[in-house]
Image (cartoon, rainbow, N blue to C red; front, top):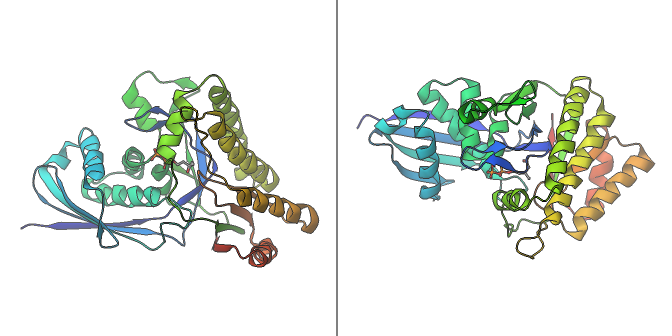
Length: 330
Ligand code: DP6
């Protein structure tokens, strides 16, 4: 059998302005722009094996354990429409993650980004095209494709005017490097819980968007304004503004999530301890002069973003409280 192999790796990312909601469920076109930092101590490595066939994924394994074949076949079926070449081969996907599933990072971002990069090598795609393929797997994966420290994912608007053609819109919505190197900053990822959440991000954002009564829409507008301010602040390295917006975007996300119960059942991801840690961190800002921010994804674990020189102060607070963590220095 004539088998070819393509290997790629990708890292998770942490959003400072979050992605929460889609205009298009199929192609994952976001309702709003988002911005993230790469977290490069964790990685996914993927080997894609291809041989003549009819567009079927024969096997997928993550760390040697078979994974959801149907989900990945669905992803291949979607991208076949853009790249018909895919129909001529069958596929075996072997992925390895170096981080535990409960480490606070969804493996779908680095997972789909690594797979898209391997597919990009096979199909000879540009970084932009690769980021579009990753996005179709999982929205936040598009931000794990570019090589830079800070990546933006714009919402598919052109010159502030919404494009009418879906394909055009879809092609304009992909992760792009904003800043290649953003040194002197650390991310501390804490682990309060490694339980699988009851409602996935995909489901949670669908609940927010489909129940919009005006609050979600206002959220999108405010966030879009802050996205532009944040982009400029990052380029000027105005850390105070960066950290101020980071905290606001995290808390707005959870405000929105709480605003839309699921058929009456409250949707929430934070624990009391999540908010307690956020408060403790703010105390360090006030009393010890630390410059930084906390943020949360759709889960209970706080992430701290701060100047590397202040790391020790935060670590000693976490140690005292017996909270486990990982550190990444940009
Ligand atoms: C809260 O990218 O996992 O982490 O596009 O449905 O796969 P799908 O969702 P996903 O959502 C991530 C949501 C978030 C915020 C963020 O990373 O921007």
